[in-house]
Length: 145
Image 1 (cartoon, one colour):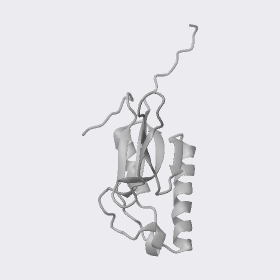
Image 2 (cartoon, helix red, strand yellow):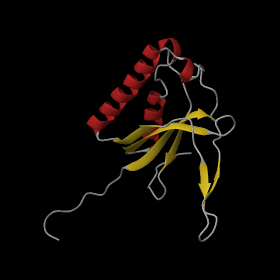
Image 3 (cartoon, helix red, strand yellow):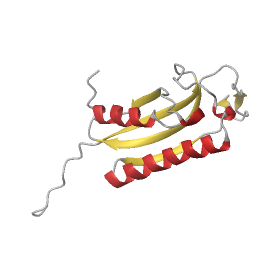
């Protein structure tokens, strides 16, 4: 194998989920569709700046925002069209977007989720939204739950 050894990767990937609804209500609980264009712009800029900072530390993997509309789909047997149900905008838990991070510990994932939760919303004040933090399946998560 030669004189070089591969370093052991101690990083673990986590998914930070932002919800339209289904999570506990945030402190600044004004729906985004009621924000001014300036408030939406400030929120999106915060998200871009946060991602850019994590790109610089090597902890950023991916992030996407999602529209509130969605449909559940399932297989319904050979030769049959898929079964669909939805959208569920009025009742179901909806994911607004996600960010994937690759960090050294569960504690770091929580720290970053806390920072992301401070994105500005209505009135330019932090939302204090609840984010769901989930390790990727099979990752060596160092959770101290």
